[in-house]
Amino acid sequence: MINFASTTFFMRSLSVLMLSAVLFLASCSEDDIKPIQADCKKTLSELTTYQPKTINVSPRDGFTNVLTGYFKGGVLKFAVVESQTPSERKMDEFFFDGEDVEYIRKTVYKFNRPTTITPEIAKQLSDTVAYDPTKTKVTVSHYYFYHERMIQWTMPDGKNMDPDNKKFDFEKRVCLNDVRRLKEMIGEKSN
Image (cartoon, rainbow, N blue to C red; front, side, top):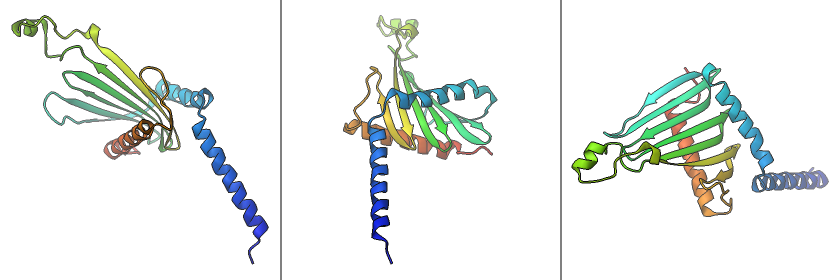
């Protein structure tokens, strides 16, 4: 025999729990981000004690891609993917809490000219502008996650993207796809 009173209570409790979770994710505040930042800072401070595993992936000439995973107790805690072309350098850093990604920092270094354009080559090309590392433009995006759900995206201009914006959902899918591919390449556990 079904007890409708307890079933109704259960359904209401479940609804309140689900509503609370939605409100938490929708109302992400700085207080929600601080523990993630503290955890990431701790990971970086302990990095020298972790076991690194590096994979070099160079799909074609002129490109360099290096993936390094850092394992603590055999579990992936941090990974960095560095790629460079003559025109830019990218560094994507992934921080993990257990099996879940909790933070991704994507940094792009956009060069004023390809690194192959030295002053001598620029002169040969009748050009006055050569690669100058002091003119590199740096942009950084920050992505915060809670149990594989993106709770905040801070764009290079320092503003947070509205979670209801379609770009937020698209970027979340890109980030989680990057995490999936990274785990496939480096593994979630060290051997």
